[in-house]
Image (cartoon, rainbow, N blue to C red; front, side, top):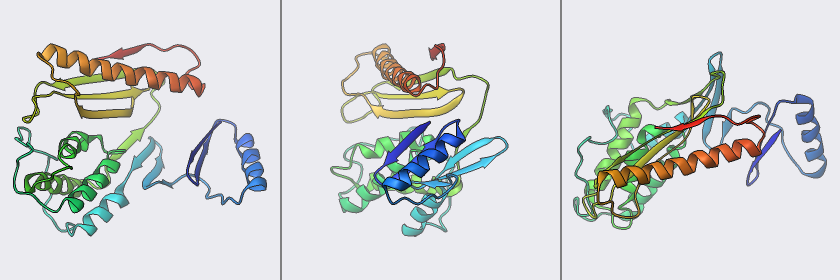
Length: 245
């Protein structure tokens, strides 16, 4: 049984229903708690179940964001950012930073269920200390992309194994400001995506090979952390093979 606590919100899961009921009874004796039943909504994330598995999405969160920005009726786009964008620190004129920072902050939280916008959000996040109009244009483009599929999320289903797999890549010298590379990785457990990241590397890589090795190092570190976490939770009953591509 696993008890996950975030401030005053608690999620209980496990494979022993009687033990879960006993835990709820003991908690109610010590604290004032309210049993909301089966998990359907948690910290802005919608949880839906169907015969194929469990779906996590932030549809309401996306619709609220579209409404607050007045973009419910906007024309959607098919990609969150241009493939060959030339975004840099001097892209456009200075703007009111608080609004841009707030929007980017909301997009960062949305990345919990939307790995498809992780790269675009990581790019605009680099310039939040001095945002320009060009950066805000990309932020609005991401929101227009979300309008295309507000209910998109993650599907978790059984594939008959719990192998830990990882994929990584690097975009060598992609930042126009300091020529640093961008690392990206995604980690799967049982063929289900559980962890991902896109971030500019902390140092300049003098070759594409070095950039790839740094990306591989970040991905492998995350894989080891995931495996250790699953072992501590007794999810991995025996050692599983792991791979990084």
